[in-house]
Amino acid sequence: MAIIASFDYATFDESDPDDFRPNSKWALLVDPGQDPDTRVDNITLIFEEIAPGDRIPLHTHPIHEVIVIDAGRPEVTLGDETREVNRGTVVFIPAGTPHGTRNSSSRPVRLHAMFPSERIGIQYLERNPAPGTEADPPQPAFTIDVRALIDA
Image (cartoon, rainbow, N blue to C red; front, side, top):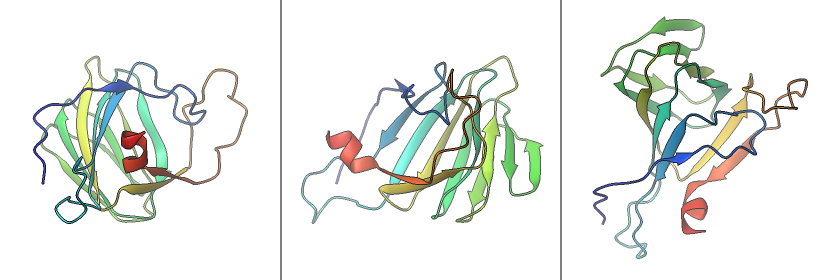
C-alpha cells in the first residue's frame, strides 16, 4: 500500500535511437512497497510532458494501455484514425494497436498512461531518430521492466 504525494520528471534517455526527445520528460511510477503481500503489482503509470514539436512515434504494445490527456491539444493516432484532442480526453488502446501522439502546438502537452503490467513491451513502427541514426531501421521489439528500472 502506498501513497505517492509527488514525483519528479526525468528527461528521456538520449541513448534510445528510436525515441529521441531531449526536450520532453517523463516519470514512471509503480507501487514502491517492499512487501509483495500488500504491494499493488501489475500496474504502471507513466506521466509525460511532450515538448512543442515533439512526438511519441507510432508504436505498439502487446498489452492494453489507457492514456488521459491532462493539458494541451495533441494530435493522437489510434489505428487508422488521427485527430486533435483536448484536455480530459481518454484514449483506450487495445493490445497490438498502432498509436502515437504529436504535439504540434507551442505549449507542452501533459498526459498520463496506465498499463496493466510492470513489464511494458514496445515495438516502434516509426522513429524519432537520434542524431546519426537517421538511416537506421527501428530496433527490434523490447520490454521495459519498470520495477527493475526504479529499484536500480
